Length: 105
Image (cartoon, rainbow, N blue to C red):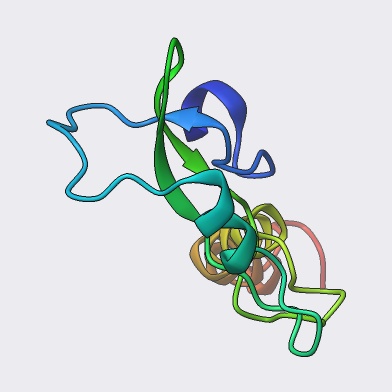
């Protein structure tokens, strides 16, 4: 999914490949109780079966709850990618900056 849509796109409302079936099918009423809790702001993202659509990841929130910065999976995934990219590429950048430039004293 990341190669096609990028890490900034939440994996919500996306089909699940290679799934044989669900052990338990959640109803809309049950899902209502799993959605955002009024006190903590936390919710449970479910994998649900829908007629005509297949089995989908349903929801895109993290357990950060009411924390505005980290509430959504896409934000967390984007910053994880930025962090890993910096860890991977910054050391070589600093090494190249410390290399002497020929002809300069």
